[in-house]
Amino acid sequence: MKWTAAKIKALKGERKIAMLTAYDALTASLVEDAGIPAVLVGDSLGMAVLGYETTLPVSMEEMLHHTAAVSRGVTNALIIADMPFMSYQPSIAMALENAGRFLKEARADAVKIEGGAFRAEMIESLVKNGVPVLGHIGLTPQSVKETGGYKVQGKTSEQARQLMDDAMAVEQAGAFAVVLECVPAELGEMISNALSIPTIGIGAGAGCDGQVLVLTDLLGVSGKPAPKFVKKFATLHPLIAEALATYKSEVESGAFPSDEHTY
Image (spheres, rainbow, N blue to C red):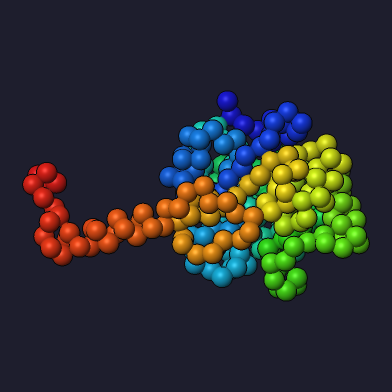
């Protein structure tokens, strides 16, 4: 069964939604084989794969390249392309053009854009033109320069009211779901209960309708400290390091390749 934005939306109240990031055909196929219904090609690839310090340098061409690779590793999962910094902010016309490129060139099924009420007109235009949209409010990494860092959002009553207004505006504009990033668990649950579309939490508590994590964080690949909201379901870094060290040692000693690995 091919997952669509409408099918993901219909899971609200029926079951929790698991979403993961993927950045290439191999990792996408692993996510697909696990039965995950939605794959986000996040601009987090800037830090997880490309070595950038933030998501800001990630370009449209890089996102198109990686989204196309993910699409080659997926048959059933919904593929959501993260629109990178300044690929949509300047104008609705630019947002439409670049979102169209994701669907036409990279075979994405939907796009994700950051921002609340002030993005409502843009979201509405995209949806009316046939582009499913996943919203994203709370901590929005593309605004890190303005916010002064990666901080929990919605901690004051005023901020909480604004986030609730943002969530309602994103829903009314036609988004099929909305990511809530780094907000207090109580607020995450309140917003989830108020909306008729699913909320996908990342550091927003168990009251959300679903969860998303960066795949390399979940697998413990980097060996670097992870945010508080990350649970490492595996710790692969030491296993990879051991395998590479053993390979180096066997090459240097002449133990590899042996007769069984030789034609």
